[in-house]
Length: 213
Image (cartoon, rainbow, N blue to C red; front, side, top):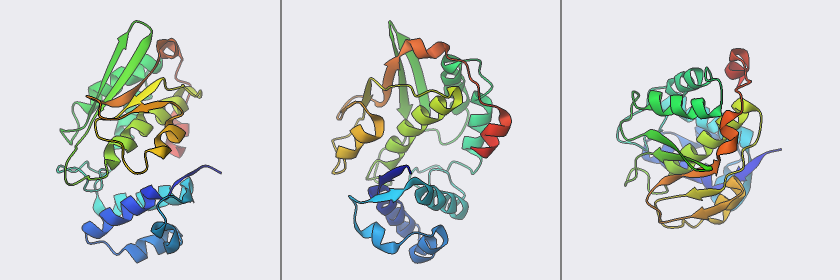
């Protein structure tokens, strides 16, 4: 059973409150015990957190959940996945990701992919400001742009180093567990690096598998 820290549950509920949503009703619909949100260093099954995210996307119509000043229309990520999964290999997947994200809102969000000697670097751009005081978007995007490509090639790609542009938060202990690598804060960029040898790995997932995912 895959689990994550309840910090993310509390973060999402605080955001829901700021947006004027009925948080007890959200928890009830997602089947989440309200007591879990009161302990930020506890654990929650990923399926419950995913259920809450889906409900919030539905209620807000915004895939950034209001954390960005410009909304990301519902269905945008599905469009990105459909486009990048047509790549032949992992390297092309990231290059296609950079291309399509340059056309989609919000303007603050994007991906910059580069290869230097034996290292591939995925730098994520996103909003940083008072609307996202806990840097949820940066964390979410780094994990998303690592996990989805791993799923696409059906192989775990070890992260060499993860970087974040803000000071270490209170839940920094979870970053290394989440990414299984050294994590540096206060850096010029948000993202991660990995060995370039994985760039030739073929994309093996089908359209029907993507729909299920």
